[in-house]
Image 1 (cartoon, one colour):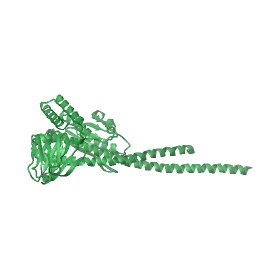
Image 2: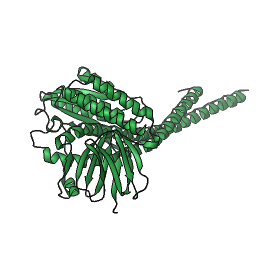
Image 3: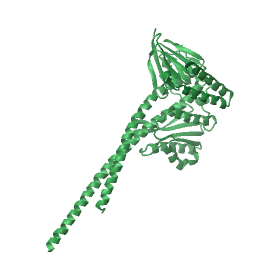
Image 4: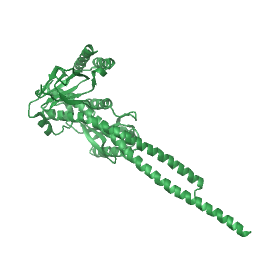
Length: 294
Length: 133
């Protein structure tokens, strides 16, 4: 049985750990609020963009002049997986579940004889993917851990993706991120970003009221400007969702860690008290039997 | 004069959403004014200044945009700006940075088309600087 001193030390160390996890939970809660409001602030732009795209895309989808980003390369042999994860761990299954989804899809495609390359955003994803697909990681992008994702950084990633596309390095790009539902539920999601998926346009038609749009410059040129921007917006949206999910996951992970530590302290304290009592009883017996012997 | 709903959104947030009388928008093929009941119209923006008139004849609210899109439909005007900064908060050095970027783009352009585009952008920026700087 552990000595009293050992037990005392263990209780102190678990208490210190509990303090840390408690603090991390509270920090995550504060950051989550900020990340959520950032995600909300970005929503209007993405919505308007979708509407405009739906408007344009519908009229140009089948035209031979449609840009490459909309029509695709006509093949789906080579895939690029853009896997967005966190810079840090200690957030439950957050990084793991995104990577698991990416790995699952990658295995399926590889089994079909297709090629897969990775572009990782965030340190953790790269670390997890390196084990199985070290040679397939084209590029790793990392951010300073404490900064909220900005549009400028999303734009840079989009530029890299588009450069690779223009160079003919891949046919289809898929973005992996975690959608934020609530603190206890984040859904790993795969979204195709290249070629662009045009949203259904029922609403768009209704907005235009059947009137004929005028374009300046031509529809094709506008679309050519719009599509790369759309890629950046989708990545930005993914990064924001990811930021909120990460904090949510960390919050619930730290919450249960704090609770576990509490339980552990309770058990150790009980054990400590029992041991102490046993020792006292033992000493008493020694004294009494010593007195009787006299 | 009739007013109409106007929205100015950047990727990071919704900047303006209100009823206005008149908006002057810097389109790539020239500035254009939007009043209520404008025909459906879509345009790419050049770097320039958006002027928003909330009341007739009042002082306009001016914002610098780096580019983006304007969408006029029967429900109003929506500007998707790359980056919108109220003019009073705009630093000349910010425009200078953009001008420098554009100059680099011109120098590094690999195709005639890209060079032309970059050159156009540069001239728009210089224009903004000349007028507002």
